Amino acid sequence: MIPIPSRLEGQTFQLYKLEKVLKPLGYTIGGNWDYDHGSFDYKIDDEVGYQFLRLPFEAVDGQLDSQGTNVQFARPFLLSHKYQVGLDDHVQSDLDMLSASFDQFSEPEDPDAEFPEKYIDLGKALLKEVETVLLD
Image 1 (spheres, helix red, strand yellow):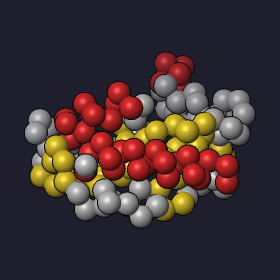
Image 2 (cartoon, rainbow, N blue to C red):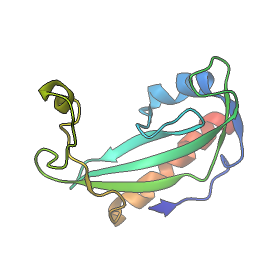
Image 3 (cartoon, one colour):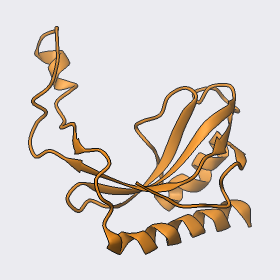
């Protein structure tokens, strides 16, 4: 993980408006969201895993699934996930094959793998684009 200082840190926005602006630029709501925090992720590449620019945020008022919720950005960072090849061999299921089908994907082999040097400048440029779109 490589933290990147940003003008976004501490800035508050309505989540719905962020989605309308960031999704057309290629950002998605990261799969690690909860009712009080989440992130927008931009997939930079999928070389030996996945490389992302992550824009983490926390709910300021309400929950993320509530209409009109405002969120505040934390420090963005570059992140690399390296996944196992094949299916997840650590699936725990007390149910039948149906429940196992929901857990068939590999767990990260290394959820904080080394970020490729060649994508650092690209990640910083992507962050500058978001700063310009949201703050200027």
